[in-house]
Length: 282
Image (cartoon, rainbow, N blue to C red; front, side, top):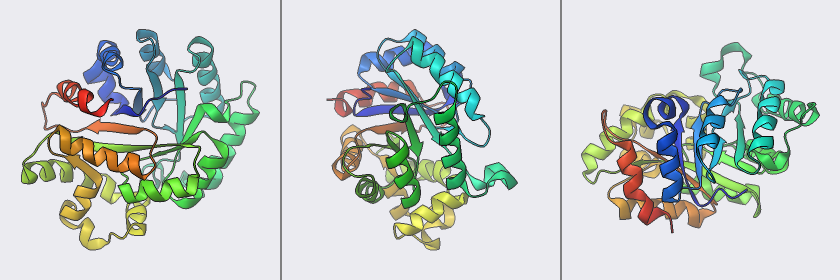
C-alpha cells in the first residue's frame, strides 16, 4: 500500500459537508497520497464513496472507534472495500477518549487488544498489514508495532514523533496528524490555533497526559495554550514555514504526515490545500 509522504486529514462531517467526491479527486490529482477520515463509521460507506470516485489515492480512517463500532461490522465492511479496491483502504482503529465514552472506557489497551483479536478471528479477517492503530503512549505504540502496520498519532510534536519512531522501530508506518494554518501574523495564527487546540484537546486526559510526558505542564495548558505549546503543535506561517515544520516530523521519523488545514470560519480550505501541494509534495 502506497500512502505517499503527505496526506490530508479531515473530520468525516467536513468531508461530507465541504469537500465531496470531486474535491477528493482533485486532491488525488495534486499528489496527496491519502485522505484520512476522522471519526469514521464502521459501515465505511463514506470511504467507499471516495474510493469509487478516485483512482489511486488511499482512503484511511483516523479513526474507527472500538467502543462504538462492532468488530464484526467493521471486518465485513473492510473486506467489502478490500475486494473492490485492493491496496487502497487503510483501516485506522483507536480507543477514542475517556471523556467521550463514559463508563465503558476502562482498560483501553486491553479493549483494543480484544478488538484486534476479534478482527483476526472474524469470518472475514482484517490482515494486520491493512490496519493502523491510533497511539500516543509507549504501550499503545508497542501494540501498534506488534499488531498493525504502524501508528497514527494525533496532536503530536516533533519530539513525540522522534520518541514514537524509537518505540516502533524502523519498519512500521508512523503517520502523525499535523494542524496547519496559512497565516503569517503570529497573533492571528495563534488565536485560531488556540481556539482549535484548547477545545477539546486540552480538556482530554490522553492528550494532556502525553504532552506532560513531553515536558509541558499546567502553565502551558492555561488560557488556551502557551505560545510554546501552540507553536509545537500547530504549523503556521507561509507555505515555506509550514513545509519546514512538517519536515521536522519527517526528519524525526515520520513516513507520512496527515495535514489538517485550519481556517477561520468561512475560509477556503480547498484553496489552502492547492497552495500547499507544490511545496509539500515533491
